[in-house]
Image 1 (cartoon, rainbow, N blue to C red):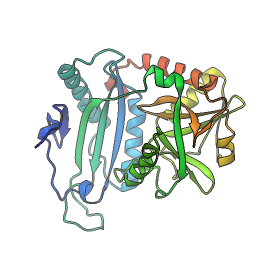
Image 2: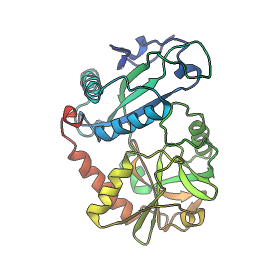
Image 3: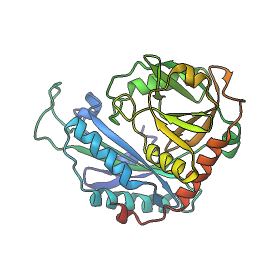
Length: 301
């Protein structure tokens, strides 16, 4: 029995409800995970950094050699309708009603063969859904994380629907009663299961390089902008496990976590075991950026 919620979505040219959307069992997204996805946060009915999300979607599609099935204006039109439909069906409208637009593009439908088939039509699926952000109590306390070796493939920069590595990574922290799994590759920080990780030392913010070993979160650019605005030192480079363990602050960033302090890692306190001043300044700047994001969606296209 289909027990999916009654939420608006778009599938291959048609707007429908989530419980009515169907794809072929031979879709390569289902068979191989051969596709990409993107998650755009929406605050107060306005998408946040839509142009940057579209740029990453285009990069991911290019890496998989899938032609972009839409122009940015067409993506914007679909998102605008789903945002409006979601607000009408749920009553979400103000700045506190966070939602997300989820976009997924697979290579399309073909008989099973590992070779990428040519001249098939991509499957396009877009849905709108509620986005849960950390409560004020969680943010004030910070969260516990655990660490693990990064066992995923070496094309982590593609926002691929092949997420089994991320599923296993997140399960490690779930089983430990923690929020995230901070991963290390060859002794250096990479990222978390579904978040980027930032290190604060002596008032300076450090992040991992933008390369094939991490997914460049949309917050990468935003956090760099916030650091410039507030005079916080910012550097992207290889960060050793020892530096992570000796950090004054550790931060997570993602669409849903925004900027969130890690206060314990593997059961040991980070810094003094409380959210720190750099993370607090970045979080405050993030909220101001959200409030200033009221530009119409079509102008970001």
